[in-house]
Image 1 (cartoon, helix red, strand yellow):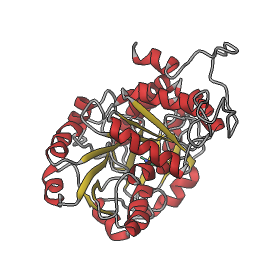
Image 2 (spheres, rainbow, N blue to C red; image 1 turned 180 degrees about the horizontal axis):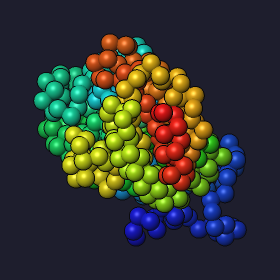
Image 3 (cartoon, rainbow, N blue to C red; image 1 turned 30 degrees about the vertical axis):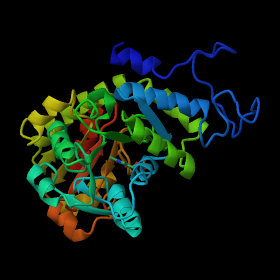
Length: 377
Ligand SMILES: Cc1ncc(COP(=O)(O)O)c(C=O)c1O
């Protein structure tokens, strides 16, 4: 079946008792067993719940994976992945990652002696140089956040396989609609499903997709043992959102391409970061490994002292963290999503006080451009 059909029907199982066409919300914590050794597939909702199971089948299907898992947030999903490693293990992480990922690794998992080295992962030599005897995985986000560096997943997967490392990819920005890292050689894909998968700014969720059965057992164990699982109501909202992923992604991207070009020619804008622009260093690679460029971009303004004034003028773009929903959002990474990065690292990476990130919604693009024009002028 083609992706657009799977986006509507993935994860479905016929409801034999009622014939319900969508998956009901099984708002239940425990399930009556037939005997101490047998049940109808479920015993306790931390271990498994039918609404969550539908999300898990769905994400596996659209990522082209054998196994899917759903969690209470993107960082809960990432924490579960990290908990399959042991104290003393080391990770190499792309330096253009979400600030919360940086904080989780550098302020929480480092206390459990899981250490991370952050590198510019667009340069594989830099990754190779950081591999130590205890390195166990390479973790990347591509396109990166908030500077949209594009990393060659397939090339990197060869390096990780040669060195017996796991390749973990955060696929939040492009979603399975545009990019399938498992097909390109990644071992683990995860998403903040709070973003495009949910798509409506009304649910926090995280998902994982994998193919390896041994890894599946480990993830399953941590999911059940720790319990950072997605509740039935949120599973339902996520399922409902994901059905329209395709048409939303097409609209987000159409608007983003037009806005990127417009900003690129704007006299008040110094630089635009969007892989869809031919001038972006990751443009050709993006075309090779993904089917689209996504709906988020960053730009740097020339007069950074005007930032508060600019932000106060938006009428449609809402000043808010997060991304990937139907409505347009604006944020300042240095002070918001990436505030947890030390200032020296922000400077080194180019996350300046004048860098604005916009998540472009599916409103009329002329209205969005007018909103940006009023703000910038
Ligand atoms: C790329 C990316 N990955 C992971 C996360 C964390 O996800 P959550 O907020 O659902 O925990 C975010 C959140 O902004 C994100 O943007």
